[in-house]
Length: 218
Image (cartoon, rainbow, N blue to C red):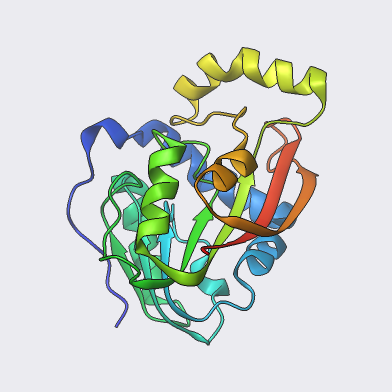
C-alpha cells in the first residue's frame, strides 16, 4: 500500500518559500528533458529501494515493476505532502517518510539500492550522507545518482565557487560547486558508470554540469 507520512520534518531543513518555487522548477525541468533523466536513473532497479530526498515524488512514476518497495525520505513538509499524493498513484509500493540524509531509516544492509536525485548538492554533509547510504545498502547493491555538480571547466567552476554562499541561502541549501564524484569514491563506492552532460532545468537557472551515475558497494 502506498502511504504518505504526516510527521513534521526538522525545522532547520524547512524551506517553504523555496519548496513552493521548486514545485514549479521541477515540473519545468521534466518538460525540458528531466523525465528522460529520471528514467535513465532508475532503469534496471529491483528489490527494495531507499530514495533519499524524494522532493515532491517526481521519480515515483518511473520506477520499474521489478522494484518491490520504495521507501522515500523527504525532510521538507511542503514537498513531502505533495510526494505523499504522488505515492498513491505510483506503479510500485511507495512509503513517504520524514527524515534526512544524516540518519537514514533501516538497519545495516537492508536495501538493494539507494537513490539520490538532485539532493547531494543540499545535504548538510556529503560524507555523512554517503556513509549512511553505504550502511543501509547490501553488499553488491547499487547506488544511483542524478546530480548537478561543479563544472570541470576552470572558469565556470570558479564562478560556481563564488556564487555558492548566496546560492545556498536562496536555494534551500543547494551548493552548485560540489565534486560529488570524488565524494562517492571517497565513501568507498565503486563508480561503474558516470555520464556527464550540461542541462538547464529552467530558463531562470543557468546551464550547469550534471551527472547520472551508477555506483556499487563492494
